[in-house]
Each structure stands twice: as structure tokens, then as C-alpha cells.
Image 1 (cartoon, one colour):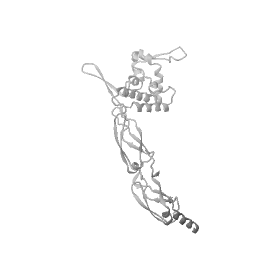
Image 2 (cartoon, rainbow, N blue to C red):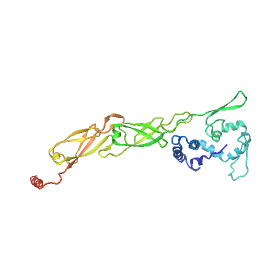
Image 3 (cartoon, one colour):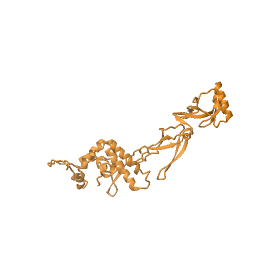
Image 4 (cartoon, rainbow, N blue to C red):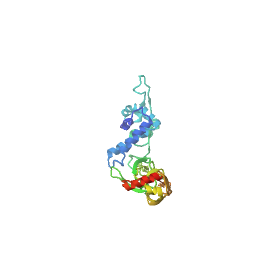
Length: 320
């Protein structure tokens, strides 16, 4: 029966707190997860050991029991793994060499360790984990049936970048893992940076027939050349000719999904902002509703003036 050093398995120190233990567990679980290492029996065993170590060290009560027994485990092995030969004593690291022991009978041993199954023999004897019942076959030999407790898989996160156009219209993506596994995902309309898209039961695999966890897509909307996004609103800048700004007129404004006509009043000042209602981004909670588009006009001055044009401007300057 092998003693497992749970601290060594997770690569943590005995003085590390629960936060550090969970951090180490998450890192290793992602590395050795069966979905990432299909058909790799060594990785599967490693993943099982990692889960076993985490279940003990992340639980203060179980961790205390484990720490107490750890120094006595060699003595337990020498007893042949039987309760009759096992006795408790002070830690061999104690300064006082006057020891006191208590021999436990099978009933007390079962009460201490339990007669239940789980991950490894060492884990079972310490904490149990699944029920075990004993029956006799027709030939008088004994057989053991283990009922493994089911457990839901852990949730996972995956970062995903989308364009503004994909966020506006919604899109479909195919996520592919290094092991060749593929998942078709649908990006809903109106997502924004920081949105979490839940994919039910697409996360970590369950144990003992338990359901898989969920996969959460962490959305990042990439910058767009034409529009600046402000929550559900969009902002853009268009250049308007000098004469249109002075005398008024109409210009075409290109939105995300369509082009509209914007009327420019006479003597419009440079930098004026126009609000186009309902031309922004879809609202995630109500995709049929949209934010607004704010259009800033930037005066486009004439270039490469002729001598005649310059004379006219000089005359206009004197008149003005």
C-alpha cells in the first residue's frame, strides 16, 4: 500500500495556505486533464492523483488528519496494513523519547479509517469516499463491490476574441483544442468585452457518471477602425466639405449594418456631434433594441488652391 505525498504531488509546501493549494491544483488540472491528454494513461493517473491531493489538502479537517497520520504511515505499512498490528504513538520527531501507545482493535480501526473506497488505498483508509459492501459467492470466496460516488466536473474558462462586426451580428465559431477536440459555439448579438458566454456541460469531465462542468467564454471585442464603442453606443467621425458645412447639405453616413443620410444645417461648426438613434449595438439582454450612433463632423478644407481661388478667398476675407 503506497504512501502518497500530497504536498509533493501538488508541488506545494506544508506551510502554504488553501489559496496557494487551489492555485497549484488549477494549474496542474488544466495540464493533465483527460480532455487535453486523450488516451494518455499516465496523464490520467496524474490527474487522479492531483484531484485526490486537492480534495484532502483543500479541506482543513482532512488536511489535519493527513498531517497527523503522515508521520505514522511507515509503522502502519510494517503492520502489514492490518488493524491488529497498528498502534498509535507520538511523532518520531518529538524531543521526548518516552512514548505511549494504544493498540486498536478492528472495530476501532474501522471507526478511525472507515471501510469505504475512493481514489487510492491510502486515501480510502484515511477518508473513505465510496461505500463498499461484502457478499459471498456460491464457492465461498468473498467479492467486493465498489459504488463510486458521482461528482460533477469543474467549470472551465476560455478567452475568445471577436470583431465588432461579429459582436453586432452574432456569429458561430469552432473551437479546437490541441488534442483535436472541436466545439461549435454561438456568439450572441451584442456581446462586449468582459461578457461571459456559458456553454452548458462543455467544461471538465465528471467523475463516476457525473455531469461535465460548464465552459465559459470570456469575450474580448477587438478595436474597430471606423467605430469606437461606448457600452451599447457607437461613435464615429466623418469628414464634411467646407462648403457643405457653410451652406448646408446632405452627407452619407455608413453604419455597421446600413448607410443613412445625415442632413447638415448651414453654418455647422467644426466638431459638432449628431445623434442617430437606434444605429448602435444590439443590447445583450434585448437584441432587438439598439444603442445610438454618435457622428462627429470634421471640416475638410480644400487643398491645392489655384491663384483665382486664393483671390476669391482674399476678397471674401475682406468682406467678412
